[in-house]
Length: 474
Image (cartoon, rainbow, N blue to C red; front, side, top):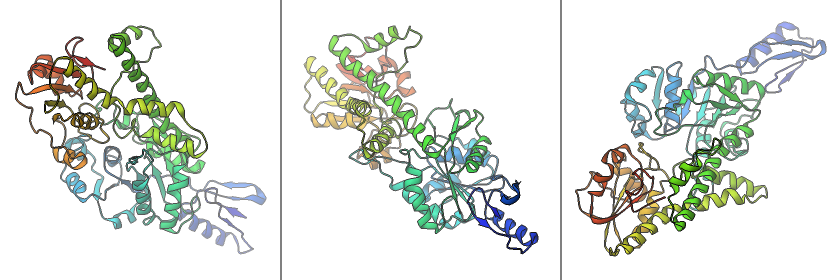
């Protein structure tokens, strides 16, 4: 009797001879089977370890996560970068990346990488890595639509022996409970028998030119021990910082979602402290600098929490927690604090205007920065928009200037018509320095104040300017 350790397929020689048996074994190997054994004699035959050395990789989704991954793999082996957005594919084919995550030189260095939006091109691939976004809806519930559609797309191209690896942030269990059934339905194949899965959560930090994909340790996992080994070895080809092989897909999923949940809660504490200290009349940053002289005090700062990770991922964990009957008080409390900070900034600015005798109705307010973080063009889930909306509810005239954004994207996503150049001096009753772009740092206190009228209010969200330079800060 012989069998495959991966898929559980069994066969019996039935007296037909070892030639027949060997042919059957060879056929199974072609389908991706791992090894066979002769159980009556306890003879183990390590015929072919699972590996992807000759496999073509398809990266599904070419955004902030998928493109750097495709580029790194594309330096070493055949890679298909796939995206349903034809304009995105054409942009990359022309050697441009509007996200600024990869330079033209880096794109050229990926000499084995090609791009496509054609579904039929996926048929030539054996390893599929899914890097699509996983947002939340307006009620802060996980929106798995992109992940489900990507799974359906991959499922239509799946063949026996193929492996699908997910990098998108999800709640623990999502890969096997949500994605695998979609793969099975679309392909007609059986999970862990005909095809296999892995999970290796992304750790991309948009705009960070120091912590790049190869220098960030990678968590890996697989749906069987052999697949886990193969997935781990695959990523080890490009990750110089090393890998950490988790014991299961669910463990790897949980590890990712708590990374950003931890940061969210820590920032929420800082934000709550800033609200308390504002009422006590002391500066939050001064307090944190003093407390930071102790060796084990963690260096978190107050601020707006937006973007596609920290402001979103905790809701995936709380969703799953509530699904299994637990109400996550601490995590949700942190989310409430952080989600309300943008309105606090707007309200505090209005109060400062009133204290200075500046009329609010119809006044001009300038917001500097729209992206969710400094020195990157990413406007996804930015909380600066909430500052703008709150100011508009006071019937203030709000202008937004951000030198990093695509103004068309801002208008499409949020309906904002942003300034395309920094405004002239002396126009604004209040200025909110919302994002710490290097251009604003270079402007300095005098350059920023020059944009306002005499006596204009200045609120420094990121505490970029020296203490006392702004009328208010977190």
